[in-house]
Amino acid sequence: MIGAAGKPNMPREADIREGIGDEALYRGLRAALAATEKELLRICGAAGAERMRGDLGRIVGAGGKRLRPALAYLCRRADAARGEALRALPLLCMLERMHSGSLRHDDVVDDAAKRRGVASVNASSGVRTAVQSGDFLLAKAMEKLDCYRGTGINEMLAAVSAEMCRGELLQQRVRYDADAQSEAF
Image (spheres, helix red, strand yellow):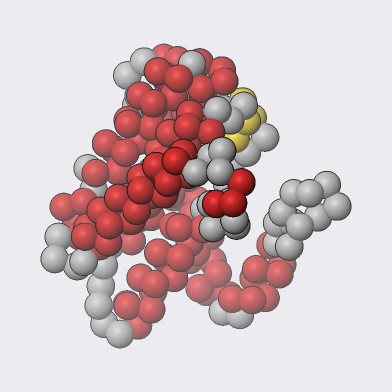
């Protein structure tokens, strides 16, 4: 839903809690997302260069919906109900690192000045730092891939990553083609 200022309206916490319906599930989700956020900030703080640490901490600290880790947590809970245990926190962090890393690259491609209301890394520190920051987050995401060997998650993440790259290339190819523009791009 789009608000009066042209920005998406974020759901209120009470609406989310009511939609989930299960207080224990909601508390578990909140705890998992808080742990994900803490781990993301820890990883940003581990970046080698001081400027990269500051840029990544600022961008990650600006928030986000954290939809990917929330969905992964809920799916993991559904699997757990069927008796299939899978460690969730590495997956949640891996998904958010991949997403955040891809956004650094997307900001460069789109020459975006802002991300989540704060200056994008490319606007504040340059294209090279933005690309290196994105690469750092993607590399840190890959550290956790071995946890999911044999689950199909690795293959799915590889396919999604390749599709994102193809989408960006297509977007560049049709950038100035008015007939090719649609909501799909």
